[in-house]
Amino acid sequence: MSIPDFQTLMLPLLQSLADGKVHEFRQAVELLSQQYELTELERAELLPSGRAPLFYNRLSWAKTHLKKAGLLEFPRRGAFQITDRGLQVLAQPPARIHMAWLQQFPEYAQALALPPANHPAPSADAMPTAIDIPEASVTPQEAIEQAHQALRRALADEVLASVKSCSPVFFEQLVVQLMIKMGYGGSRQEAGQAVGKSGDGGIDGIINEDRLGLDSIYLQAKRWEGVVGRPEIMKFVGALAGQRATKGVFITTSSFTQEAKAYAASSQYRLVLIDGARLADLMVEHDLGVSVAAIYHLKRLDSDFFSEE
Image 1 (tube, rainbow, N blue to C red):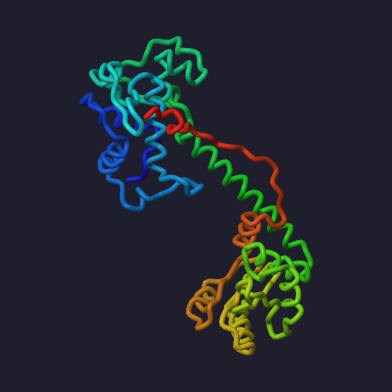
Image 2: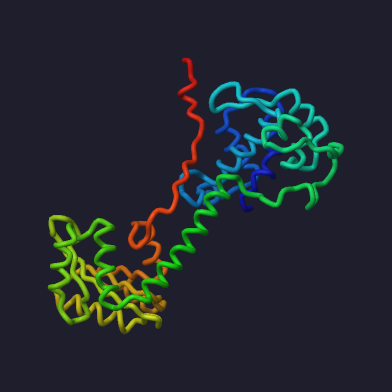
C-alpha cells in the first residue's frame, strides 16, 4: 500500500486517540504504519530534501490540522490527546475528515485565514466529493520541496544546454573545476598543472584525489551529442593501463549505453561514468556555473525555548 496523503490520515489518527488518554506521537506513527501495512521501504521513504520520513511528515501535518480545528490538544511536548469535540466527532464520524470538512469549525477557518463555511456542515455520513476536497493532497512542506525540486531540474536542464554549447577546451576546463569544487585536486593552480601534463592517449586531465597528492584520478571529457558506447570506455581503460593508473572518471554531456555501464562496472579499474544529467546536477549542487537567486528560510517552533522545566 502506498503512503496515504495527510488528509486521508486525519480520521484514522483521531480514531487512534479514541480512548481519551495521552499518547506519544511516535506511538501513533508506529500504530498507523501497521494499520496501513507500510513496508520497510515505505517507512524509510524521505521527503525530497531527505530531512524527514515522508509518512512521519504527513502524519504531523494531519495532527496540526486536527489541532487547529480543536479536535485534539498537546498536553506536553511530543504527546497529544483527543478533546471533547474530537470525541463528539467520533460519536458520529464522517466517512473522511479533510480540510474542507474542518472548515465548519470557526477556529480552523480563522487559523487558515478562511471565512467560516456558510453552508451547513457536512452530514456525518456524507462522502467527500471533488468539490469540497482541496486539490492539494500534499503537505505545505512537501509542496515547497516539490517546487524546489522542479526549479532545480529546470535549472539543471539550462546548465546542460549551456555546457553543450561551449567549446571542447572550455568543457575540459569545466570538468577540472567541477572536480576541485567536489574536493579533489587541491588548488586550481595544481589542477591546471595536472591538465598540462595530460597526454594524448585518451586522457584529458589528471587531478589529485586528495590535497596531498597520494593518488591520481584520470579524466576523460567528451562533449558529445551521441550516446557513448562500450568501445569508448574500452579505449579509456586502455589509456589508464598505459599510464599505470587505477582510477578514472569519464564525463560526457550525453549518455552511456547499458553495455558501456556494464563494462565499466566489471572492469578491474575503478571507473565512474558521469552522464550529462548527472553532470548538470553536480554543477548545481556545487555552485559551478550557477548563482543564488533567492533564499527562503523555513522555520519551526523551538519547543526547548518555551520549556520551564
